Length: 196
Image (cartoon, rainbow, N blue to C red; front, side, top):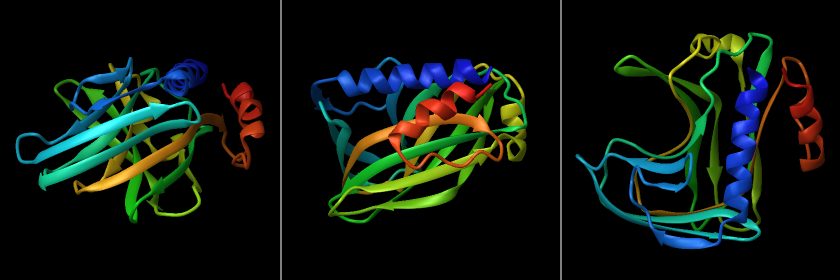
């Protein structure tokens, strides 16, 4: 179960790392399979562009004329049930032209609805050197993850506003509860291999 979710995410991130593309952001349109932006296009009005180049996972810019209720970058996750004794983790390296707050959330689909499980940490990207930031979500604190779902997304949620943001890299892992968060890229394959 944990292996399937981890493998799917690693595949999507690897696809993004190989991507060389730029273009307009169209909410709901996948940049690569399983990766897309979502925005409130009913209440809000905005334009956006993205750029993917070797060495940088994804850069994007939004110009918001009228703020909507939500704005997010999404990655699809496997919907299998997870066991309570694991923790989900995300490590990102980011910069932004101004301070941009963001937070991670996992959304699990339900019949005609969904349940959100937000990671407890809130982060801020800013100018200068890239910042490495870690978010952890114990499965025992998220009952919705302990049940199978028809679909799941990992969401990178932003306040709907104008900004420029660079996601230099992102790592996703699932590890036994109590294992230390990896402090470097070299530690991630070890934790991922032991998950599940």
